[in-house]
Amino acid sequence: MPETILLTGCTGYLAKHILLRLLNAGHVVRGSLRSDTRAQEVRQAVAPHLTDPALLDNLSFVQLDLTKDEGWDSAMRDITILMHTASPFPFTQPKDENDLIRPAVDGTLRALRAAQNAGVKRVILTSSTAAISGSPGSGTKTEADWTDITASGVTPYVKSKTLAEKAAWDFVEKHPDMVLTTINPGFILGPSLDAHYGTSLLAIERILAARDPAVPRIGFTTVDVRDVADMHVGAINTPDTEGKRILSVAEFMWFTELAGAIARAFPDRKVVTRQAPNALMRVMALFDPAIRQLVPALGKRDEISNARARSIFGIDFRPVEDAVVASAQSVIAAGK
Image (cartoon, rainbow, N blue to C red; front, side, top):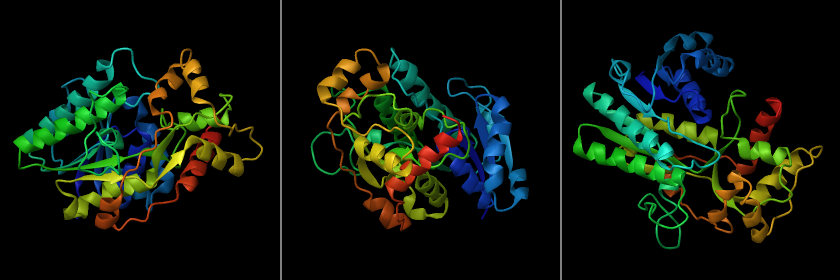
């Protein structure tokens, strides 16, 4: 049955993939934008991939800001599902962590309050493995884990994702008429639907441009953007997702492996694949904010379970090397 869905942050790299799937599934989508000047960008991103060009008629837009109350109540009118993907995602960390934390937490609560006031019962929220992987102790992390934001080395981004998700669960606990699902993806890679992919693929840009003399010993549990989008849309008609956190991860990949995959796929590019000593990275971090935020992750390997996603959705995650190559293809197509 078609739903009427408010998709927040619809200009995002992941959100555009979600939007495409929602439209192809026959849903009516109201996409939120911070600036209505980007509406045509979103239309042009999804239009070539629609199964029927007429489905674009099911898309409309509303201008919303995570930090402002204006427009949220009217945006929820006639909505049956809130799909909240909007959240700040910087490539470098801000000087004041609250510049990142407050919009993430307040924006989530602003969306939920408006949904609750409008009688919206179903909410699907994009969270992150960041809200899980920093939990105390060793071993494989699952949806039962929560990141300890008081631990040393926790970045403002990790705090923002953890606190925003906790705020959402606290909210629905106080409003039991609402049903929440969170999708917690790892490091998202894969094709972009257009050249406007924001900060999501900047790490791929950096590798393709050979900006660094060596690759840091860091890695992330990675997932293809198409799989993450499939899980968001699949949750709509999967009752077993209700009231659950669901990790969206395929496998762990070191950046040296990532760079190696790009080097093999694009042998004409001078891709750096040698590994940087940790000591060198710490020196470089003194001069480069983008590197500075990576220092706490040097040599750290996270083990994160995708058993719940496989059980509920029956999903067979795409190989992460395919996602890496598709990311690089998108960056090259964008002229970067």
